[in-house]
Amino acid sequence: MTRIGVVLPSSNTTVEPEFRSILPDNCTIHAARVPLEDVTADELDVMADHAERAASLLSHASVDGVAYACTTGSLIHGSGFDTRLESRLSDVIDAPAIATARSVVRGLNALDADKVAVATPYAAELDRLERDYLTENDIEVVSIDGRGLVENTTIGKLDAVDAEEQAKSVLSTTPEADALFISCTNYRSIPALMSLETEFDIPVVSSNAATVWDLCNQVGIQLDSSVKIPFGRHILD
Image: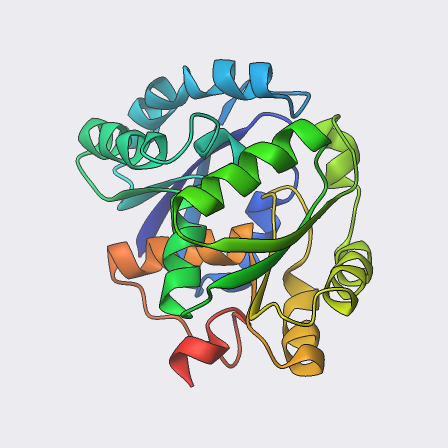
């Protein structure tokens, strides 16, 4: 049995069920929550200060790896903050640790995606930070569309239908995109990924799918892409 640790915002209601839908049955999920109610730069900054304490608690469960499962929370201070966060958490648990923002970059790089359309639930401030972060990592953001939401429980009420509709709207205006990224670990979107990939014939990455894919690579978990996870179809086929 492989134990997966997750550090996530206290108001997140999506990570655990979406991770469970992707991970094989021989994996268990163990979460530690850090305080966040509104998805703003200030609250994300405070949340990051609690990350190592949360990881240390997960180490008591002898987890085999940890994900810091917050997209904007792991890019809030730009490129470099993500890898430093991973290193700090890895030291605490003495096992692999990954941060969602860096996982997304790893996934897009693995897909050779240079021009990316982005759909988010965020307000403009965080959309700007996300665009800057991806640009710093040599990924061109050809368009970014945010829903303008701040309260994280409101974001958690969105479902895969909302994600698919937003994604279609973004892609219909940016035919030059060679990948789509649906951002936010609290944005339910896993069930929409395969149909979007099929309709638009480009890779579609979500925050949770990329995080699980990356952590499984780090820990050595084999995913069945045809059954469990739509993201990766363009890598693993």
